Image (tube, rainbow over all chains, first blue to last red; front, side, top):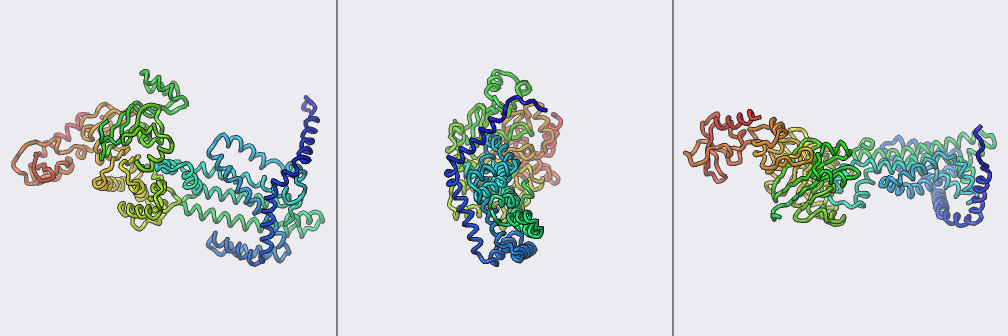
Length: 289
Length: 342
């Protein structure tokens, strides 16, 4: 046994009390700060629910066709979504979609600039990388509990937990994409007098875009992977159905909702991937080289 | 200094490493480069380089890989900052410029062509050629019109909307050349611009550059590792070895009088028939007009086939006056002497 060198109880009590203090004194402020997220999530959800089902299917099928220029993927999209409708999972899938889209959008807003800063400063990269490791490996329940304590159960902690889990790959891939831009292209831009800003927006970001898109793809996938956990704290949607299926030992309910998540994952994965490939072909790069 | 000097480098030294100034003092104190590199781990890229490029001159800087020639050319537009020395372009000290002035200088006074082309892969050929003008802030319609013009001049009509990766290497470098020429600046930096191309295409590009240069009369600093290329296109040649200038002069002079053993080795494989011009070996004076003649700028290679038919070949100025003549013997002597001299 490892010897007990000092009593850790005070430390633990200090952390727990600290959290309680934060909840008591800062809870409202945190809630106010996260309010815009809630508004965004609710707006997207309401908007998607307002749209007739066939329009959503048509839009996604259209996106799929635009990305692949083939009919295979649109057919898969239509079949998958019709299946969800038939299984009475339409509303839940739309809610899950809304959660995933909100998480992805928020992640994009924060992760891409963060990735860019990381690519330009090795100091920032050294600091941020372990934080990203933490975000990706820390079991989500560990931070779910304090977030629920601060915000109360509901959509906000669900959304936050999803973002924490889903954002890191996008940060990493943005950073990677920008650092991978061929130095000779950058040098040429510099030789013609491009300012750092012109280099960033005219050269680095466009050339990193396929990699960034791969990051967005990863983020959507990881956001979907979180829906069951998110539903435990009140996110609703397909995850909630899975949870109910488990709770009631109703295997069928769990299976169908689970399949629904898979369908969503396939649709969004294939669409974002195809757009990434299209972009790569345009640039004439296979991979990043 | 002199008014027609476009680029002047004075005592430019570049030391790569964490503490260049320390190493610089030791280098200036007279310690040898090899010693310092081994001892301090610093790399001495350029060692006290002087270079003069006159207006309208195609100045070739030549050296083997690692001789510092690419480092040298990057000092002219300050893509690399020197550790010591002075660099004047158009009479202005580049090192005095702050970042904003430097960008303005790069946008309006100097253009560059790269060995690896450095094209923007996500843009069409047209937008690539217009890139420099875009950075300069030229309005869209005008810059596309200019780009269009230069694309035609380098012979890429019809490729305006292609992407760089759809073009061959030679075509890509034409885009790079057009991009630099579209800037309409006096000074052109060409960093091993043709080295990545196949020999045949390279030769074609050299001819094209010479043809363009006849019209444009730019000041060109051209980097190469290929002596034949230097001989073909250069008005002046400066040879670098281990970061230091070992010889500078007209290409022919360099071939005829190599400055040291390294240079002799360099020159050994050179095609002398192309390097030696007829006027340096001809019999000067007024003679009976010869039945066939070559122009003053011709080299031995041009005159050789004429000896199949004639004993004497005249050398004429551009307006047709004969200023000298030569026989096959003289040519053979010239070629043979310099071959055996090594």
